[in-house]
Length: 220
Image (cartoon, rainbow, N blue to C red):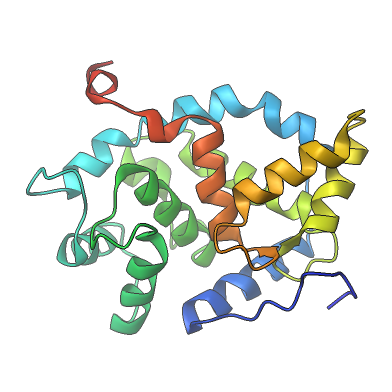
């Protein structure tokens, strides 16, 4: 699509196909974010909001083992009042269990919530603010969606290295090539030359330091 090198990606599951379709629909509306630099400036605020999700994570981690298993995920989705088929729940679990240890860690949980937000992108189906007690969570997820839309220049639901270079160039970075390459490699988890929204989210949690959450963060 769009003739961009590295865009031979095709959805592996029905859920991923839905994510791509949802992102394409969202991209057709445009983005309020003007440059990659403006995304970086939002890192501290995004980091602060996402860390507040720790209490939500612990609520659904019923056995307190530091991960949400398949059954706990089903209870979580039921509590959020979002309806997925059994197949979609299985796909969602596998998609977010990046290290394949059969459990959703905190950073993976944040990615999962944002994917649910994308798939259920309307106020009646996903009222994160009232149900989760994190006032800015919905706005934060919208910022992450906006950021991906900025990078996905041809609006096909994936980001290529070429598109990443273009986004960094537009930010006015002098060494845009190496910076874009490094950022793209951090996003392209499966090294297939294109980045899905899920991969972007995992990279983003690393960029803002979510993987560095330790026990002392829980008591802030």
